[in-house]
Amino acid sequence: MTTTPQTLKKLTVQRNGELPEAPGQTSKALRISGVSVENTEVEGLWFGKVHTGPGEISDAHHHGEAETGGYVFKGRGFIRFGERYEEIVYLEEGDFVYVPPFVPHIEGNASKTEELVWLTTRTPDNIVVNLEDQDVAELEIDYRS
Image 1 (cartoon, helix red, strand yellow):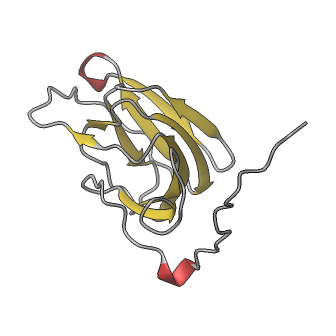
Image 2: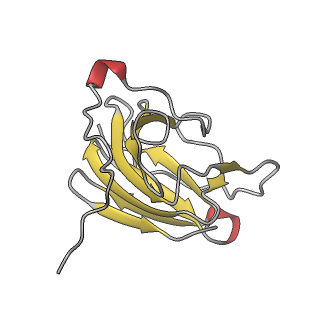
């Protein structure tokens, strides 16, 4: 038998034109909060959008203890990780990715003409740790369109 708490949280809708920028940001990866502590009664979850302009590549970062799930909503992207960020995976519209806690990575838009939009969820929150002075290998990026 399932029990219902005495006080239910309020069901809310966050309208597209009213979504706030997330408190954790990385250069060239604009995070917009959809469901977050900034605009709902949620606990232990962040769900939002990440926008990367044509040809842009984010700075190196990780998400601390947060587990991250991503979905390529629009465009074609890539994630670099590993030693000197030499490993790269490309993601197309409709692809999902899991980024484990504390894994340093760089996100990029693999198109020079179209915006990249990820739908991203994290638990327990939108933790963003920007990394400075990283040794990043030179890689040829497979840009399309």
